[in-house]
Length: 297
Image 1 (cartoon, rainbow, N blue to C red):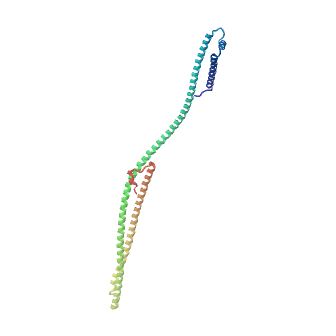
Image 2 (cartoon, helix red, strand yellow):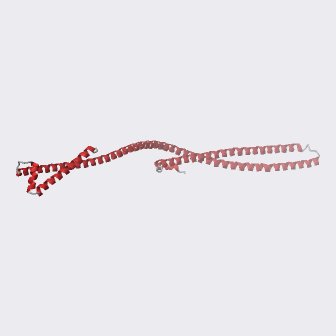
Image 3 (cartoon, helix red, strand yellow):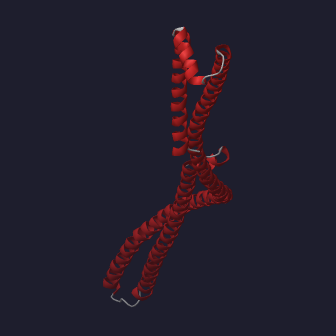
């Protein structure tokens, strides 16, 4: 509480009255102690009036002086208490201001703590959601590991099939080339034999003068043999082309499956690496040891 103007005026008035009383008392004491007997008697007669004895008057004067001194002491004690009270009130006001400041700060801290508590609750909820997502990712990673193992087995199986088919294709191509070369070699030989037989028949025809006796059957047989060889050659060539086409198609299909398997492995590896990066970013920690086997390339 603050000091009112009336209280301040009262304090000032009391101080002034105390100062005046103190001055008058000093003047009275000086006059009683330092003056002559005639002056003291005159002063006492003036103050106390006529018809009283000097001794009684002096005693009364001393008694009044003592009472006045007692009153002055009481007033000084009261004044000292009042000053102490005013000082204490001033300190209380200062402390009250400090308390108000501390209360405002405490209120601010309480509001900040409430906000921090809400943020902590939100962060806890986020951590729970992230933990749930991590468990889901772990479950998916186990499935991806099984899928990766299956894909690697399929890839190895397809790779073995590819090598087997390539070996078969090479063997068939070699056999077809050998058969084709053989038939190609046999065809000129048969043609030469046909030419020789024609020449022989011509010689015989010239010798015997009759073509119809020797040529019809041999020529027909040779022509049938040539036609059969040409048909076999054509069939072998068609079979060779069909086998090459079929094995080329199978080889292309196997290569596509192998490439698809490699792409699936790369996609799964990229996904696992992204999971690792997300885990490291969110939790500021390395991936658990139980999941590091899923991140190998």
